[in-house]
Length: 362
View 1: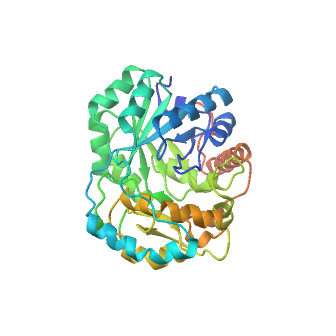
View 2: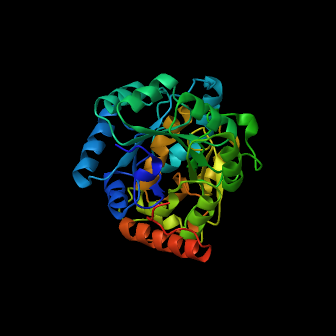
View 3: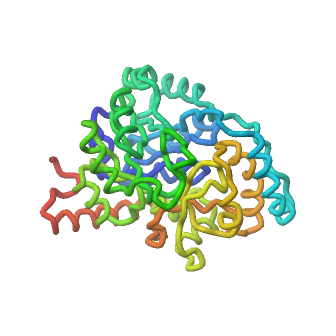
């Protein structure tokens, strides 16, 4: 088990946990084997489903890896606004010839059961999204030798993570694809000015806490990794960059959309899940985003059948195409090769700035 963040892998490159199928055992194993830190996403999986993926990953690599958990969410959804949104989606039901999903799904994502498995059969790293675990939870992981990371978007969230006993924080900038990892979902904060950019967030968190930082948000090139390391991060986490790899479990339509000129930009939206998430702007987002309520995970369950039907029909306009702001820089390389290319780019950038080379002692 690791004792420090830099003990986890050769390169300061983390493959982001992408819930919904993007990051499975095959991708995580390839990244680990290449010298990065691969992650499994336990979000939206049952506890047993998570455990089966851990077993599969262990059969593919003996390198350290991580597992990401979603924190349980408070039940703040107003049932009436969810029903209004259900009516808003009536056209999707007709178009894709499917029913809308049942909104009564679990709101804790099997959190306690997953914790029990990970304490009983420890993994090297566990990270948390959508909040900060209690000190008791983090202390229990420390006792079994698991390194813990809490996703944060502000200095205040980072301070809460440090106080609770996290070993490190993953600082997520607003540029990041997929869900924003804010600890409190505040609909009043929605808007174009919501959220800190990665470099601004890193600067504020660096002055607020003493634990190591992993930087996440829009990173696609080794030169960008060099920039966040210069800003104080110990490692860089990339999600969209790995989404296009053959080992990624993302739908082929999703992979193609990353560099398709038809999808020109990304926006934050509640349209698919009820929580702010960054994705490629498509028809579904344009038509339903303005009306989507702050009701996670009820909206996630509600739209799940439509999203699956759209994927089955080969229609990217009805899918959640999560992507960071750097999506146009995606490269269709095998994951191992991508890690090697990123490391070479990072070394070149460090050499230009007279930084120590990747993998050297510091």
